[in-house]
Length: 269
Image 1 (cartoon, one colour):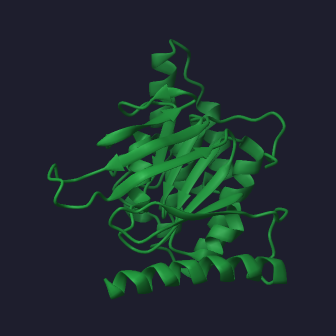
Image 2: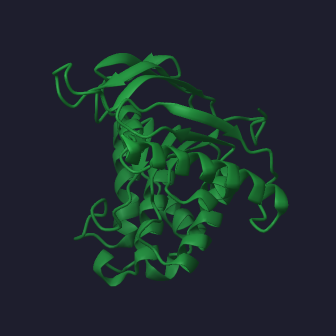
């Protein structure tokens, strides 16, 4: 697979025969069973599948919020044992991750200040202005989260995370709560930012169109319990993608058929 940028920035992510149980009893099937996958450095990898199959769980394993019952997750070959600054997560919630008592500028500056302090460097406020311009929030810099629309809140979250340039960005249905037009604009913006800035993106969504619009590869998970990847699809389409093209529709149709089959099989159990 060809990575979008020959000067690849990002980390490789690997799941090695991962098993996750929420209950120690062997009588209850694991959520994820014997799952193995390698995501290349600089790749945009999208995970789709039926509800409850463990999509968001995989992100939390990479983030270090959860530990596998068996197997291992590595980032650049290093075992994941806890959260780290090399990995950052964009959540579905548009309010929870933001610091409600800080304005937009302060929210975006927060991570940059921590990073500068940890590296014993001087904080550069110009970086905050740069990222506010990138996500189109310069005019809202002094507003509190309570004064923002849902789309604006999510752009603050994206700017705050991208500003510190994590090698791996984990995105858990970040636009699910937004209206269709705002969602479409932010999908385009995330794709453009990834192409410009680099980094590895692991993205969870229920939206098949969104998956084909963004992903270099799409992993379709089987229905749980004991979920795994049923299929991995390589999306060999140039960016920006035309979701009205026959090629786009063909990939989306195959992915949708596989998810529907998994849902129907789970109903029959």
